[in-house]
Amino acid sequence: MTTKVNCPNCQTEVVWNTESEFRPFCSKRCQLIDLGEWASEGHKISQPVQGAQPLSEEMLDALEDEFLQNNKFFVESE
Image (cartoon, rainbow, N blue to C red):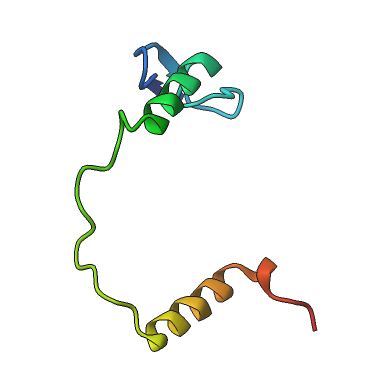
């Protein structure tokens, strides 16, 4: 089954597959229009970050360990 989506900018129907270079956009033009909206802050995430709290050293160490486990390309070879 072929998946089809509407271009977020102009609503043109786009086939969602590897040949659709600009998916979910229909063209480079629509992709750049959307990028421009984000750059000019026309689009933004409206909800503030929930539960912001200062990070402790232990929390930073745990985050670093988790990151390194999931991103082996940052680990130096032995």
